[in-house]
Image (cartoon, rainbow, N blue to C red; front, side, top):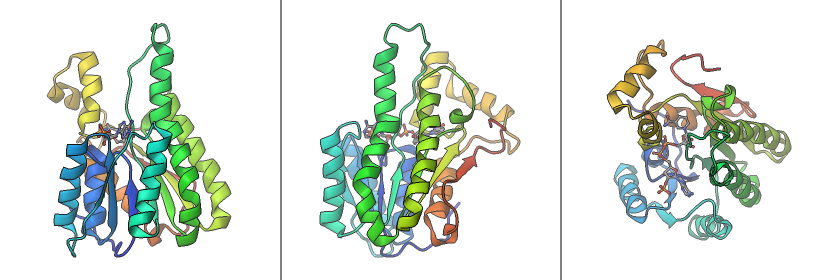
Length: 259
Ligand code: NDP
């Protein structure tokens, strides 16, 4: 599966680009001509994905490597300032970094989980958006946030709350930033094969195959999502083809009707 858009000369910052959806998205942007910022906490993975980006780029363009924790405000500031120092501008911000949690309201450590999940999935997006607005205004750029279908339906608390709030945040900033020429949209993926699924596998003790079989039963398209399925939606929403699309929830779940 490949995509066919042109991002030549665009500068794209993708959080959580060391694995899964973010890594595939970084490589796809590079393949389509973009200058990419690869970031995450794992240094070895940052370098490995940056290398894949350079190999995919039609000009062999080097990706910028930034090891950063999005829950740390100083790291967020450094991530944005290094991007601007290196590439002199920012066209697209993809807030993709995220983590799951299977928590119950009676858990003794519920507030620790709350802080960890909210800081990673929501507060970091508010911080990075705040830091990037001035740069995106100059390029008439745009923002794509990666949420989840979990935002639509009550389940075990915390993770769905973080994603529902992310959806509303996206709609609020789309309203505020439209007059500045900046679009903001949010993607709600269903289950996608990545390291992320391991957290649920560990809790349910199911083997990956069993877990995926269960998911497939609920999906009319008859397969589990691949990271590239989500990347394609990111590419569309961040491209000029979506110039009249903002404040939108874009569901990528194989029609599983989680909504
Ligand atoms: P992965 O676990 O493969 O990727 C998660 C990414 O987030 C990694 O690159 C990780 O990098 C990064 N990350 C996590 N915490 C931090 C942090 N504190 N600071 C910086 N980076 C961080 O999962 P996916 O690719 O599947 O997940 C991407 C997004 O998609 C997430 O927001 C997730 O909620 C969402 N999603 C995923 C679904 C799925 O089924 N896979 C379904 C619906 C939504 P590192 O460890 O190097 O820091």
